[in-house]
Image (cartoon, rainbow, N blue to C red; front, side, top):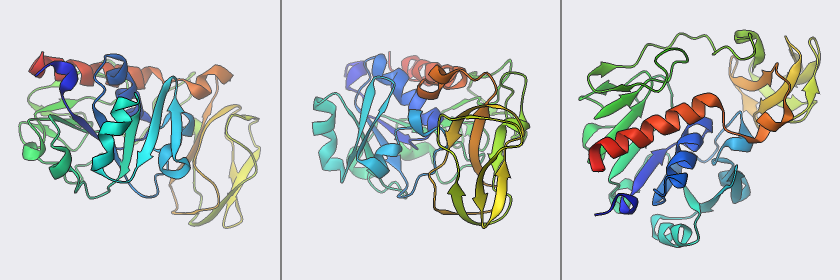
Length: 266
């Protein structure tokens, strides 16, 4: 079987998973299907294929994703040059899809149920996976010297709980729910915001910007959110072009997963 005939299933259509899909698609590995939850909460919505769950279709840079209703529709999406997104939070469709490669890109900091025998090649991203036990290969997701390193024995670095530094800023750039309750935004994705500005409210409690910059990430409004949930992301660099483009971290992880596949199948 040629490499570009291999079927690849990706758990998650979030930002990092979407960057991986984009990289594989441009490497002409296009028999990809994304498995998502019914109510995904992507922060960087403009570069996340899971937005197709809500809108029916979406674009990540120049690649189009479409929501499908069942595994029998994947071939039509592939024929159209599109990436199919299937709502399947329990991954029951894997038996019908029979992937050659399964990538767990949920990045939940723990393994939510991926097993070594789910596919001939199972790749786990970040903490929660041990190479040889939960996955055949593990990819390091922690920003820094080892970002994108392929681990053949052992685990990725443990979760630090500290967001990566962008423009010299780390945790201050991330917006989190101050309490549990209904989220209502007072700004829009892509807005330039100022330090101290009230960007929205959760159960009436303000969500306030700690820095100035571009609102690069913002989850969908008007939903109930738990306290501490990541709601958004302010980019202090303020470059509007970054809103619709994959990040450096995403591109690194995409290259690492592509290398994993080529190590085994090329």
